[in-house]
Length: 547
Image (cartoon, rainbow, N blue to C red; front, side, top):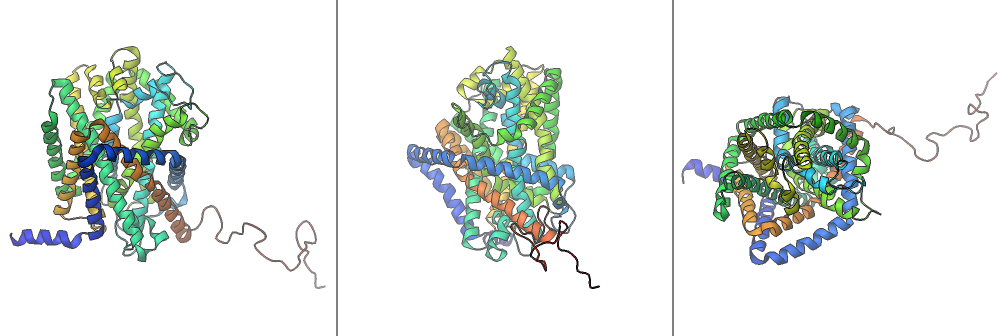
């Protein structure tokens, strides 16, 4: 081994946090091994715990996510928004910052579900609205529900973690870029290497790997479904390994190049292709219908936002089941991504204000997401409702990965659009895997902003292998079991995100002044004593005249 290679290896062993690295790796390998040894037992156990979580904690997820959204909206318009992350200038331009934030933590799911999610709500609308499925009345409700699930709330849990980690890491001394750093005022800066902080960071690693690997499995299945749908190429297990290995190689190369040359450039390319495909769908699709549909769905989401956020389905036949299957699932899924997405947001937010991060996290990203689901999802919904394209098998067989190809096949030059869609799927796969691998590497090195190449390659291979193994050995039941496992690991992060919000409120109140109550507010009784216990008149105690 050369001196340079020895230096790289030495850097790897010197930088890792042995406790977080070892437990994170062992938990991940243990889950994979358990699937190999006794998949049915693991699936049954996970489903049992999942049932307990959604039965007893569903209300907590709804309330916590709703409060986080309100808090972030207040940060955008309130006085705390001017607080800055550190003393330096921003490292990236606003457009690059937005593109990386959007591509890294969110857009892979947006691309996957864009052409298909509204179809499921059209077939089976939320009981909250009392609309019959498959009717004209269900069309705007389906888009409204989709916009609600993919706009503010999911983005909010990523943003609150990113804000908390970035603020305490860049404004406090000796606070590293770690998930547990978001709780600095609660656990104390001196306890960030203590047992509680280690547990939070270990769970963050496990949740991130489980959530991202499953998502990458979805995206990989979408790519493979496109090959089979368009050209009849059935890859089989060997082909799945080759596709996922190739994608893993691509995001590993991007990752080793670093944020500046890798993630930033690819994210910018993603956004250009994303916008181009969205605008093409708007122009070639039912343009006027989409404008009318989008306006009505947006108005409905704004008007019904509170009721949709806190709807538990109590007292409605099938309401709780529908809410658990969709809204609670999405919130827990987003929460399982919140450690990685929050850490990555913190990594690229140095020098920005609280208002910039909050606005970009839930405002600018929603502004990009809403047109995508309106144009792409609305076109698919219109074509399905009018019979222009047939998505019935997608809903009946629960195969959302083929919806995009059915949609774009109905366009002029459909093959060109399908190829562009597959490229977009692949590049978002790469940026999601790239940024999540960087985040896991940071978690397992005690918060190092630029982990070694060996560390990043190791976790990149783990993510790729996990995704490939799940696609091959899991099938529908295996993937479903891991989704449930992600909900199990994601649900505790609802309380971590809530604690991160309380940490920010506590620090901002003490450092920058309260905005609701005065510093010496007395809730009961009087805040000052007077010389006379009984006032002399309606104006208070009478003034004494010495004359």
